[in-house]
Image 1 (cartoon, rainbow, N blue to C red):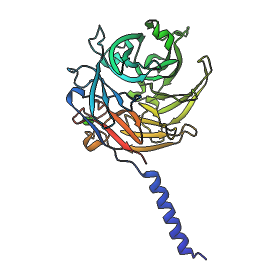
Image 2 (image 1 turned 30 degrees about the vertical axis):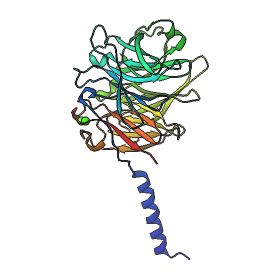
Image 3 (image 1 turned 30 degrees about the horizontal axis):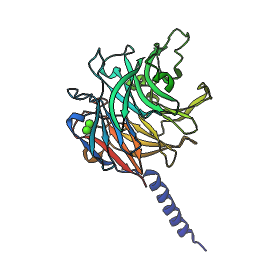
Image 4 (image 1 turned 45 degrees about the horizontal axis):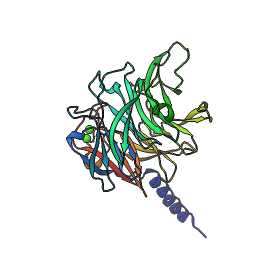
Length: 355
Ligand SMILES: [Ca+2]
Ligand SMILES: [Ca+2]
């Protein structure tokens, strides 16, 4: 028979295990120390050969051009392609990257990052031949702030982070372009119609952001589409993830908030973990990486550290994107001088080993 004192002891042990289990944060390490010529990393995708392709917009030292680099299975770097400059700004600002069903790379060029908020953002196709990037075409123009890219078997989806302000609310959204359309020539999308009139037919859905902080102007960001077609969209300024169900024709049949806050300060880049099915999210404001259960919306913080950490030893330093390869979560530290952070060396890709 258990004595009362033993019961208390059992309870304390159980409580310790529970609390310990909830608070066990992983410690990121440095996967890649990036040289100055790759000073600002962002979007990533794993290719068919298990390389990570990384967009490097070089915002913080733009004397270096925007490029795509490859991180091989041994975390070694090779340059893949120099992205085409916008003819008006002389800059390319690549954020999200996806691999299309045609094997080509699709890159979001967010001209908002180089001072243009007049629908100058683009979708770039980097044409691959025999495993090499050989040329690029501009396949979509007219986007306001192109951000994440997600490719499905028949389409390329792109988030637009801030399309307009209506009644004090930031309107953002998701564009869809069918592969067949992109293959037959460039697409030009119309700006968001603020008069309540018809929107461009490529606009799948919109989100609203109302947070009173400055990041309330940052809406649709990370994007992931599950194998069953369910779409998940990060609403950065609301620190939330929206879940969107589409019908066969691509029309929205439902849209609701899956998770909001609960330790998340912002929701930036996102990927679906191929093993657990969880959404893995970079939290730029919170200097953290979280997992969200797509069934319940439960948020689990995987790693988190102080702001302006420098990125020393692999600490998160304004993380903007995640990428999952095997049991590792790679995290791009965009490290912008913003929100109390200073851009500083080392420029890093952090890595978090999962169990
Ligand atoms: Ca920093
Ligand atoms: Ca840093």
